[in-house]
Image (cartoon, rainbow, N blue to C red; front, side):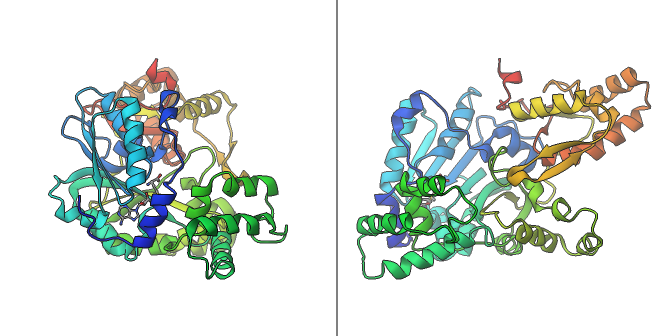
Length: 440
Ligand SMILES: C[S@@+](CC[C@H](N)C(=O)[O-])C[C@H]1O[C@@H](n2cnc3c(N)ncnc32)[C@H](O)[C@@H]1O
């Protein structure tokens, strides 16, 4: 247990205010589901659907905080029987203690605990990992590039990472308030006193302050005042740098990684993958055609700036390209979550033509599924491979099989971007999803 390299003030902050705020006893009544770390999703994006999460599977949670991701991964792996293990690493002993107590309450024995800096990973003598989760951590390092290279050095060549870093344009309000607190609280070194003073300043913010503008004031204040670890993490952090989409591509390239894709942090109310497409905002405008000629990172940065509220970028990254599953005969489609089952059922039952799907912030896309795609979707059971579903849909509709395949391939892009329908290879053991349909 050697803390090799870390920022002392960052460590002190997370010793005093472990993040996020968690009570171990709450494990008796609920499991926090980190959507990024759903095995079915990791498999689809990071392993072309071919990962079985067997006994040798090893996951690392770097900067694991109070344990959400480590526990969710370990719980999913345990439910698979003889399955893989999770390694947790964090510089904060108090965060580690909370995470370990949560695991004890759940009776989880498949997590290895390391009180150390993720910068020390290459020297810890660990076996390389299949999957690395690092959420909300790298942007707090003095040298995030070194942090990402450290993670990459312990990732298997065919492994993948699930990462989250702060968004440059979506946190403008946060950075203004950080400036305010730095100025207003200069000369107050004690963190507990800083928190107390910050609370009083927040309560006096007028309606036109950037943090209050366009927001429900009471809710905006509660978000910080009822959750001091959150207040400290967001508004009083000593070390915090954001990334634009373009900067994320550069960040990854510097560690020999490719962006697999952005993903939905929470599918219902957080930044969604579709928000990275300029067409969501500029459909029908001539300028969109020009933007579409630009490199993908530029297109996505345009979307990021128009959107204005992508405070978190959540994405999968891997040393290899093409780690995402594609709709082929031997792939088994499944719904990831209950709301996806409901949404697809509604789409199947809707009369021909487009239906509106509402995303976060009231943003809408028009979903116009081909009747042949609907015929395939109606048969999805999480067990049957696409080849058979195509045969059956062709028989039901009397359409040529090639037409069924073409229709499904076209619509699958949107269905998987929404993360409603994902794929696993028929030879990969089915993973539990959060859709009750498969868990009864
Ligand atoms: C904002 S919290 C995120 C916790 C967790 N990943 C989550 O999403 O709930 C950041 C965590 O990173 C840890 N951390 C910061 N620098 C670190 C380093 N160099 N090595 C390991 N952990 C670090 C902190 O102690 C803290 O627990």
